[in-house]
Image (cartoon, rainbow, N blue to C red):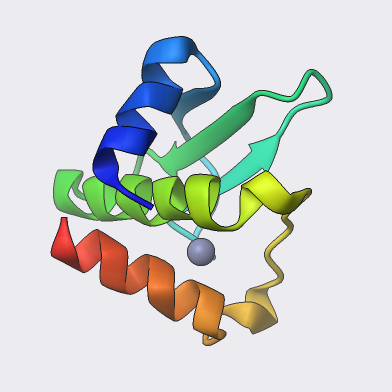
Length: 93
Ligand SMILES: [Zn+2]
């Protein structure tokens, strides 16, 4: 997983990001549409820094977790290895 891979996904339109009101439980999430495109939604009410962290965190899921299939995060998974890896990536970039 690398930032250049994420940039390629954005350039080709395979990955898109939108800012929206998504509620207080999470700062962002990612999903794959029926047409196979990846969408990252980032909460509009958080700080620009938190939005950036959420975007990087979800971008990590786009390349590390989602290529193998559908990905749905349950709120009880917040401390899973997958989530820790995404947080570490967001903190590094
Ligand atoms: Zn995550």
